[in-house]
Amino acid sequence: MKKTSRLLLFLLLLFLSSCSAAPEPKISEQQAKSIVIEKNTRTIGSVTIVSIEQKGNKYIIKWENPENCESGVEHMNHQSGKIITSEVTIC
Image (cartoon, rainbow, N blue to C red; front, top):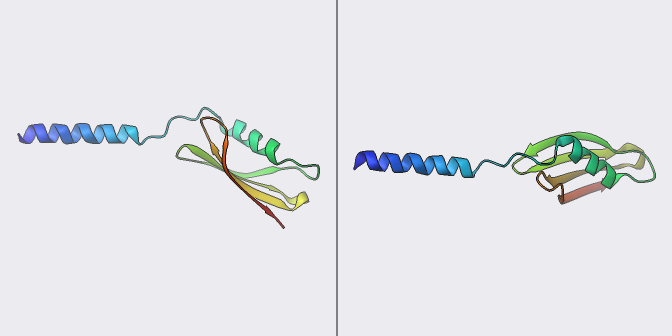
């Protein structure tokens, strides 16, 4: 009985650990940067990527356009490339 319960516990832990892992990104970091630059480019200045971080199933991309006095953070799904949330600050 003790061996059976240990085996069941091991299988449960194995199953839960494999389910919690995020899938490999389909969108590369470079593609994600390009999407954010294209989305936020205006007639004044140019968008620069400050940082990009992969967290769970998304990229968190910080950007700025100092000439236009704008900056922001984009949360992007790394499977589809779609923007989940967007925060923009204007001076």
